[in-house]
Image (cartoon, rainbow, N blue to C red):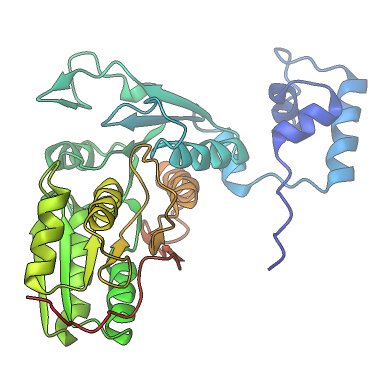
Length: 348
């Protein structure tokens, strides 16, 4: 499939015209008041580049330009910049930055929030939410009480990831985990698997519940389907339990746990996927070294970030041109760890 051409941005226009992005914005918004002085030749140069590239300002940028600060806040419940090149948050932030640039907004990362019971809190004595026109919320688990207060206060926000209602609908852009997991279960059933195990993390977040819901809905055709919680550092025992139970495929919520299970299976002389298939239900949340391409799916993190800004601009300016609750499809990964089960000779 041919990739679509990259959209020209204000940053591109500024670079080609040899001016600042702020100057491009002023020209686009036709600012001619006394406080803003742009040399006629500079204005002409910017307009010439705009014409040559066919640049068209995003409609949301035009709506936001006259009425708002054009500052979008980003609040993360966990640290946004941990070490490791495969940081889970990084693609979300890339998508957020890309769309914010498209609509001519600056980003403000809220980092002064205090940590209470191991988690950051939005609301505190010195919270600065009002510096931004609205805020994007990132985190595996988001406090329902804080969502409730945001709704009651009428502060514009969008959550990345599906969230339950909190005294009203919560605007969000999430991944359709239930459908993605269900498709994997259905594929395993077609491959001949009849005894299935879901290996979860014991989390109560909506993303975990959606994965389990997808597993339950699709596993009705299995001879035996169960859910267990992974115990830290107990991969060898988990493999023994899977074998004793007769399970031929494990659907693993946490990527690092899947890697540990595969290593434990090999230590026992088991083949993956012959003796035990292992399916992952998302991307690593922290760097996990492995040479194995696991069957599973990728989370559309960059696109979730982009659409979160798109939804937020609609919430801010009242245009809301589309649903404020969106679930995006996950990208299947064929991988090498799901196949037809071998005959159950010698299994207990």
